[in-house]
Length: 165
Length: 165
DNA sequence: GATGCTTCGTTATGTTATAACATGGACGAG
DNA sequence: CTCGTCCATGTTATAACATAACGAAGCATC
Ligand SMILES: [Zn+2]
Ligand SMILES: [Zn+2]
Ligand SMILES: [Zn+2]
Ligand SMILES: [Zn+2]
Image 1 (cartoon, each protein chain N blue to C red):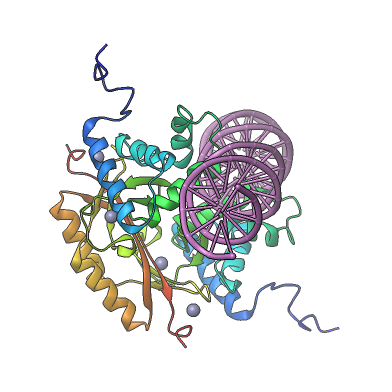
Image 2: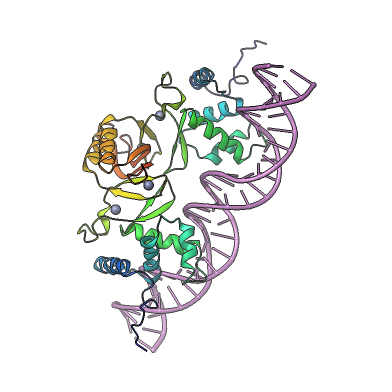
């Protein structure tokens, strides 16, 4: 039999996602960290999900490969992926989305880029923005209070263009 | 004995807080809702807390008056106070702060004013802002995506002026 | 005093996240 | 080689946050 007969056994995800996983793996390698099998699988699941999955959604899916996966398994992977800037947590949803910031970003793991998220309450879609005007306004407002920003959570709930029929 | 000897039995909170509770009670009455005893006590606890308390912190304190208070007791009160615009939930902390928006606000219960929160990671203090520039920038960014904003969560973590010694 | 509404009590359960400690593999120092 | 160290993971248990469901008590209104 041709060993390339289907590809499903080697690559559990669609080609487009496998490509992004490959990039992510390279990026981690460059930074001296490792995108291990579990971490890679979790990232793949997040990339493949139709809606941002929660930790326990991911856990359930991960059990396809790791029958004994437990909450710490998934939370450790999520922590790692967040530190590496590969995913973001949406606080309002307790759910996770892939970072859409350019993957070839040269900022490195400590990029910690500031993003804003538009969450559609109907279709559940989340769009990541990086709007400079918002950041500037926020910086100014914080500075006026003598406040030093370290981390921002900007999440907007509403209706996406597609759902405003 | 003078019935005004201490005041502690009638008024469990300091005078300044009792005054705010009185205002809140009036505001609710005007809107046709009732700031019942439990709700008033929860609001008082939030106003009196040194740091934003979580639901279970409040529950524990509430048991001073209501020995059998259970999670639904506190969550119902918190829902009410949030609907009335008297408090805000800080998502990052799963904790609650009093609204510092002018209490005499004529917007009514449905005011739903948009606020931003500066959270000090050292002292835990939370400051509520209402910065128009931020709202404008956010509105523009959302509009550019065809997104209709219904609700915003803007929470910034960092160091407050006092803690940047 | 019957009706309808809001509020509250009570029990149970669901959901999200972490603590604590044990295991195993990779890798360089000695 | 083999010891020690680091990192990643396994495993069990529990903490922390939130809601479902149902019934009874208060209160207004007729
Ligand atoms: Zn991003
Ligand atoms: Zn939508
Ligand atoms: Zn407010
Ligand atoms: Zn501070």
